[in-house]
Image (cartoon, rainbow, N blue to C red; front, side):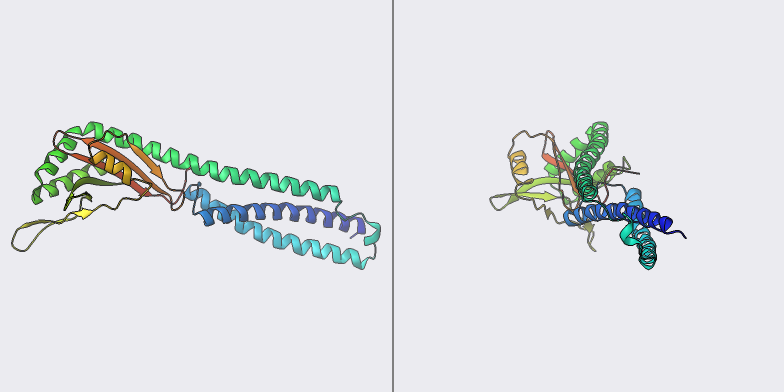
Length: 272
């Protein structure tokens, strides 16, 4: 093989290696951000594809390193390396760094914008489905209020059945919880539906479960609503762990309660 051809191959493999390394570093940046902040704006299929591409870049980089090393060793053996202008110029290196950091900054922006878009889109879909189901079944919501007001153990079984029915009306609806208020001593307490059972003697048993609110998240909202204040629907999500919450307040003629749709979502909405 001619020396000029070897030099051209060395330059080509070096350029390709620089390109592949840039892609690898950008992929590593995305991986560090998503893993460190526990966010993922991409759909499951896209996530799998990106991991496969990441692994492929590692293999391609290894092959290019071997080719480049082989070409340069051959050039050194020909003792012509000093006569060949194969070393990259300083201006080209600076341009590479500028381009790399510009693309890296764009990727970081894409991740956070995609994360925001993913969560807002998901909340919008769930909210639309929840509104449809609740508007179609307002009579059942009024029945929940009447049953909560009665407070009899056997009535909670019916409330649980209604909750399960509402939750299954759309395939995209997440977990549905019913939050209601009561008193613990002289303190306002928040409860959610728990398990209903019948003991061996045929007696209905219902042990209410406390609902644990989160400061600076929903505690103040729940206190205001169950104290008689009018509140709007509350939609929240967390950056870490991809938790989604939609609080839908309902005031019947007998009682107040909140329908809480919540879900832990591991993937976003970008990609396929």
